[in-house]
Length: 204
Image (cartoon, rainbow, N blue to C red; front, side, top):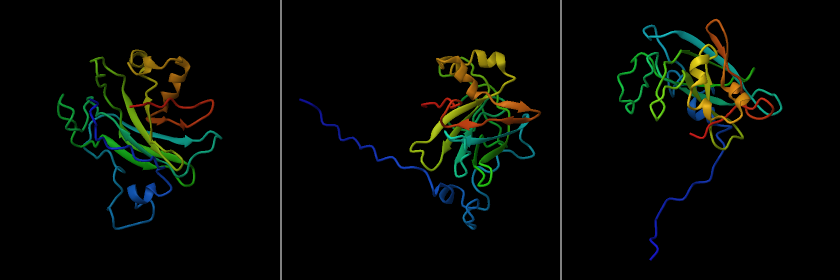
């Protein structure tokens, strides 16, 4: 006899916009009194350990136009390679580093900026060390499911060459879409949604 499984049905997908900023970043949307500051707007303080860096860039559509209504969240390990999460049982992460940030793209330039630190290396599920990286999640009007990708650091060429995720990218030239450019302590990472320079997105 076939067993009947009373499983919940998948709900219909919806785009995140155009009201995503009202719900997630009310101060940015001009709505005061909900939060003193928008959640995720500050990742570090004066006591945070590690190398301070700035990560900036734009989210660019298939026509080459920056999106001015996207929202980006990032997750990363601290300088010692530990996540600020109860599920990370390897040690205690830096209490002065959130490990998570949220930023809308500018309504004028389509750009985003995060003030953070360079993360340490963390193990892959099979124990191999991954190269230092920052995980990105992007939502915007017209995107039904949030897109995930990663930023890797150009100066970590040896670690990048053995990173378990980067090694899984079949077309090696496309792996370059995950490598930021750097000038001083500023890393630039443009995310291309479509087109010749389309960023590699991950199904995580």
